[in-house]
Image (cartoon, rainbow, N blue to C red; front, side):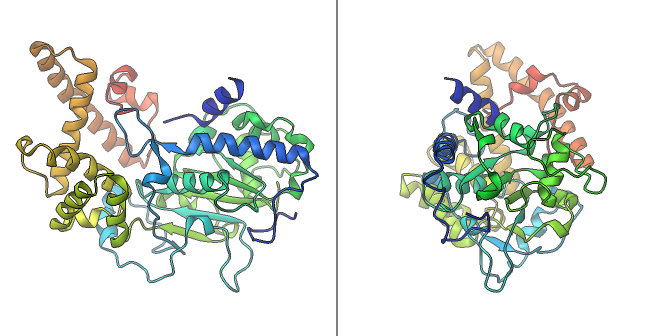
Length: 414
């Protein structure tokens, strides 16, 4: 996982703000400072998001987002309300759920109101793990940065909750933006209330902030320092930059952390439709014969085909089947979920052992024995955190299960 703050820091050191509409033509040409900041920001965001790690790419290679991106099925509204049961136990039921017959929303139209609908300020998009929330955010930002969409936006800020968790010092909102975007030097000279701004907060389910909307003090001055928690609640409530647009993503169980009165509207990513499943595999492989062969195999198994509504499962299937279809001697090609996950685990184990082993038979045996021990510990960690409803693990969680950070890092597939 790349730290956005570290990446940007390294790079930098080596109009009424109504909802999006075609009538706004970007920053005032006379405002050279705004233009300068916008150009720098777009350049940085394009470099950051044009290449991505797909799934858990083991080789460290990055892939062009536009080359593999497949539009997701996004609807407005809450399909079934918040379900507090852990999503791992919901997936099979969810996959069989009849898709609502709503008109799907394109991610670039997230802030576009429907006919007769009031202006949109804050959108919450929910979806289970691996369904494509972060990729949708990255595509939205990339299309703005490259001039493909939403050019009525003056400035766009990406603030992942995973990184907001790590900030202990107090900041003003302007200071926080400069912490994440060092290229924003001079932003204090811009009248932000006269700009069209978009704030994107990805991963509400990863947040360790209190987000106390009742007790947090009111704050309306972008230059006044406070905790990140207070800054966020005031931004969401509209006390800070009331005309700014906010996009928040979350897994379902965490979505109720923000009172519904501040959300207009609620949207849900439902993954890939059946045509989008096929499109994914065609986008994923340059060799279309291989893509067709893999998709044909997936369709032979009802459980695999159903589960491919989840983009991450599509990637796992593509990773496994690409290797196995090229090597018929490698064993039976999986037709069940258990078989697919087992083969994926074997692939990752082999990658790890090649990285840390020396090819010696005795050494290989030791690695296999250690694999068994660490996998049992990781399974214990996953189960305990699942029971607690946690989706992000920290060092103290590893220690509780007898896992050292060094040990765990060897199983990292980045």
